[in-house]
Structure formats: structure tokens, C-alpha cells
Amino acid sequence: MNSDDQNTYFGRDLEAMSFAVNYHNWIIDEFKPYFGTQVAEIGAGTGNFTELLLASKTTIQNLVAFEPSSNMYPLLAKKMTGIEQVKTINGFFGSADEIQEPGFDSVIYTNVLEHVEQDEQELRNMYRSLKPGGHALIFVPALSFLYSDFDKQLQHYRRYNKDGLVKIAKDAGFIIEKAKYFDLVGIIPWFIAFRVLKGSISGNSVSLYDKLVIPMMRKIESKITPPIGKNLLLIAKKE
Image 1 (cartoon, one colour):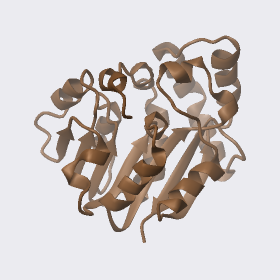
Image 2 (cartoon, rainbow, N blue to C red; image 1 turned 135 degrees about the vertical axis):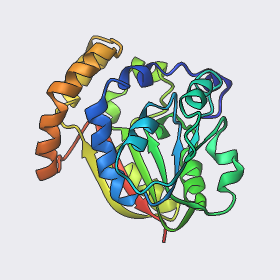
Image 3 (tube, rainbow, N blue to C red; image 1 turned 120 degrees about the vertical axis):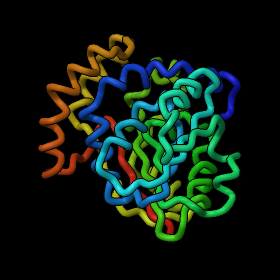
Image 4 (cartoon, helix red, strand yellow; image 1 turned 90 degrees about the horizontal axis):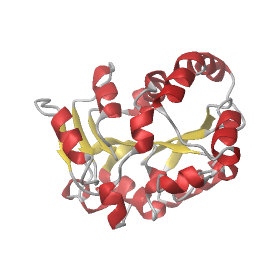
């Protein structure tokens, strides 16, 4: 994320996805065993996911929430006011003093890495910021054939495939502990809504999908890892 436009990112996807509580708790539960105590959340937006992290029963003692956009950061800072375990930073992760020496047990990128033009460098920044044995916890949109005008509007540089994301993580020095597709059934409605109908996301549609579909898909995907999915989850370890 290195353009001036992204410093005033309006976060339509984040606003709509704030309704996806089941979806986000599913992601958090996948990441939970790897958090440790000192955690960085990159691209925290207005703090919706941050709030869910804090509400979950995790090992997190200190959380540094990074948000570069000039319009979203004040909302994040206000929401986190008075929460001692959280520090907010209005800036890009790669230029922050906090990453100059390894200090984090985990670094979380939830629907953020696709906004970063130089994702290979960002993964190297992640690696440098982590303590030995620390984890990069990454969740991104998947499948290039789903890339639409809506992705462009949201300033997404790409959608990932598993092999591609695994490669750049390994190139940055990481050991891959888990890489899997996520939300198989979401492919078809996403393709129709954004590739065929060229629509946009809404809180109502997200909330409906979150309540009716996600609980069922979570049960299924806990038993059967899907061969493909609308999203991709990666857990990578620093030696």
C-alpha cells in the first residue's frame, strides 16, 4: 500500500464485512493457536476485527494495530481508547520503528496483503519483525478468475492462489505450517455477483451469508479441506 489514494481509503469492504461476525470468528479460531502474547495486526481499519480479537479467549497480552489511512485511523484510535493492551499506529508496517528488531510472536494480515503492491517485501518485513518461532497469519482473497472491477475499486492488486502465496512466503524465509483454501461455496455467488452482474458488496448480503452459510461451511471444512475456495489462509513460521 504505497499510493496517496490508499491514505484515504474508504474501506467499503471493511464496512460491509463488519457484519460477518461468524466468518471473522472462524478465521480467529484458525489463527488462535499461533498468536502468542505480542501481536501486530496490519491494516486494522476501523477496528472491527481488532474488537473480535480482544473479545476472543486468546493468549494476546499486547496488540499493536497498524492502519495507514488518514480517514480510518481516527475511528480505530477512538475505538481503542482506554484499552491498555492495544497500541495504535497511523502508518505503514514496513516503515515502523516497531519492526526494526524482532519483537512479535505473530503478525496478522486479514484481507490486507492484496492491497500491498510489493507483497514480497511485505513478507520480508513480517519475517524481520517476528521473534524466532513466531508466525505470520495471513488471510487473503483467492482465485484470479474471481478478480473483478469490484477488486479494482477496493484497490486490490491481485487475488492469490495457494502455490503463489506459499512461494513468496518461502522466499521470505518462512516455513509453511498450513496453507488451505477457505469458503468453497462462496465461489459461485461471488462470481455471479461481481464478475457477471458487476455488483458491489452490502452489509445485508454479507449478514445473510454469514448467518445462513458460514456455520454450515465451517462444520464441513473442519472435516474436509476444500480443494479450492474463495479465500486462502496461510500460517507460516519463522525458524
